[in-house]
Amino acid sequence: MDKHTIKVTNKNYPNTIQLGDIENWRDWELPKIDLLMGGSPCQGFSFAGKCLNFDDPRSRLFFDYVNVLNHVKPKYFLLENVKMKKEYQDIISEYLGVQPIEINSSLVSAQNRVRLYWTNIPNVDVPNDKGLTWKDVADDSIKLNKYLYTEKSLSWLKEQGYIRDNKHKDHTDGKQQDKKTGRYFNEITLKEVNQSVAAMRGRYINGTKGKTAQFIEFRKDGKTNCLTTVQKDNVVVPFTHHEKVLAENYIYRYMTPKEYERLQTVPENYTDSVSDTQRFKMLGNGWTVEVIAHILNYINKVK
Image 1 (cartoon, one colour):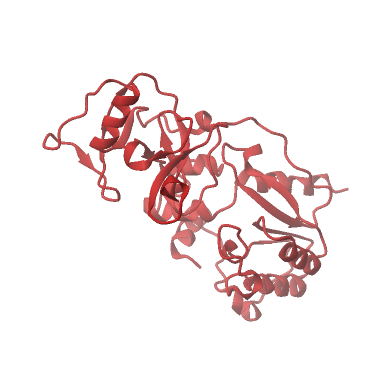
Image 2 (image 1 turned 180 degrees about the vertical axis):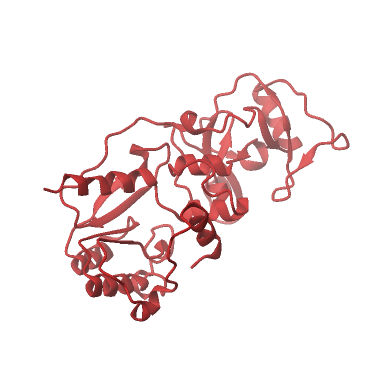
């Protein structure tokens, strides 16, 4: 029902029929259909959330999916959700009559995204690993050494011996400032650039409860973290450090919408009819296209 996602859908598939709120499914005059796909919002089940399970009004939408499934009786169905507690998973499996298959999008993209898929399409197996990494999806139009930085981060990099020739401009000389962070955006010449992805997380300082600060936590496997609607869950860094680093001491940049699309294996510029903010939101909430294509391809194998 999100107006921005509807706009993107209608731009790419103008003949799409929008039915509206699933809670009003009884008012729909649905014809015989072959495939029903869906996924109730994950916040009620997610380990990252409060794990409110079926008491969460968003997750209760699962039962509307079940009602539509039982009413329409399509030939095939597909339901997606996050990895969750076994007790919640078992309830969904009982209603749908099948066990889920766990697939990590990292097999077909550079993104670590573990999801559960319930389907009656027979014999679905996990896809083969394509071995994709961040370097396969990074936006080449963004200069590798163009990052957000503070004076404190530049000092830290100098002390660590990472900066070879600091060419950043002073505050009065046309430097762009990022509205979100107050950091400055310009080019910095580094000793070496080995671009990768990290997450910015709020953590207790020195590991003890009390004062918290934002830290950069690095991935070292060439993948990204799971895309979400929060941009700081994935920030691009010029190189990894052996341990987490205070965000104020480090330089980074945010991903581009094109990189989000590539990580979700969505066609490039598929979402460019809305603002970048909405693109990040819908792509973070969305499905990895190659995973869904892999699952649906098994329909072709049904004898």
